[in-house]
Image (cartoon, rainbow over all chains, first blue to last red; front, top):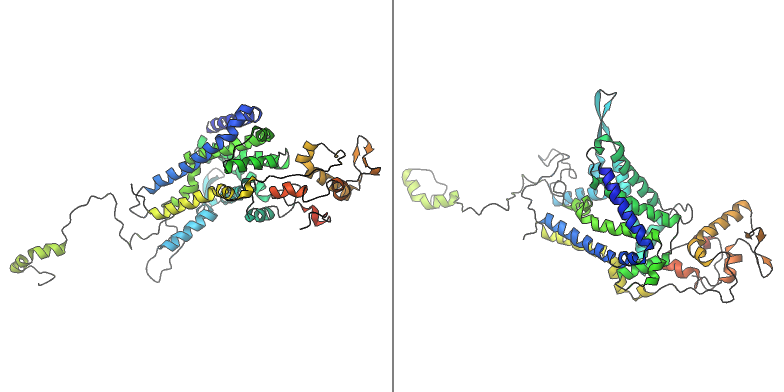
Length: 334
Length: 136
């Protein structure tokens, strides 16, 4: 059910992009207004989400402890999986964000011969999601060659590494292969693994389909149905430097490019409202980004009432004469 | 309104927005963002081996096909409709240097215009001698 619905959404957006590629009127709207709407919604949406998360108090440290806690001096602490200092928490976050450390611990449970439940190591999800995420980042950075003039030097560096094997012409990028492999795995996993399928919603399938759409149209344009890249770059640079876009320039953009562009704008708009904000959310996960120092530091609930307290020292100060007179022991004689 | 760990969150947001809008700042701060490729076409132009639209989009495929034909199959001449194409009475070879560069002799004003604009680094010149006017 979830798959059907998200396929429907996907096809509607594909159709809109396709029609816009042929209708000058729609092309003008998709080429001049849509990108600004998308950029604005993306940036404002993400900031709003992060600020909303930042406003929730974190009174108590709820770190997941994946190793030995800091304890007696002769018990060795696992500083990365159960950090007690800010530095340790930073290291843990670094491994989480860059290498998906918690996903590396992924296991699977399966019935063997239909009777015994067996748990085993499963690294495939970790591998393909890491491949997908890194490829997406590198592909985004490589696209800076269409975004700016002059082109930053890191683009050339990335292109050289990415096309290291010099296979084919235009040279096939390693990340192009990896992103398609990664997305295909992540998508098929939701369809063929019944345990994952039963918990999958349209909001799980749709982002995969959308990014798959972006990657496939991009690959088609690079290797098979070439588009006028000079026009494409003039178009994107005009958008990103707030210059007007002429209708003769729009006419040079191929329908396939308009589909690619529509998918990208859809992704930007959809991003802050969907599970994809884990881009920012990962940094704010309280089970990972906090030091496990509950026993070392006092954490006060910020919503506690301001209760007037009467400490023992103040109590003794007030009643000292009477206590001494009654023979009750006091901490300070005078 | 209180933002817990406020400075860290604000710093993170500044880095994120700054990085994501980097192309905008780069374009606005550089006058070069308005420069577009200016191709100089040969004046005494005979017809190209393919039409302009095809060459614009697929010249790399054509050159790759030529390379494979010559180097791997030993098929050397450009054949169109069963006859070998000629230029000034000479048979036209499938060759960057002996065909393309005969008319498009200035690399800097032709090849490099779009290639530099799009950061394309073709490895033609790993083997071929660079024509004058484009030596770097």
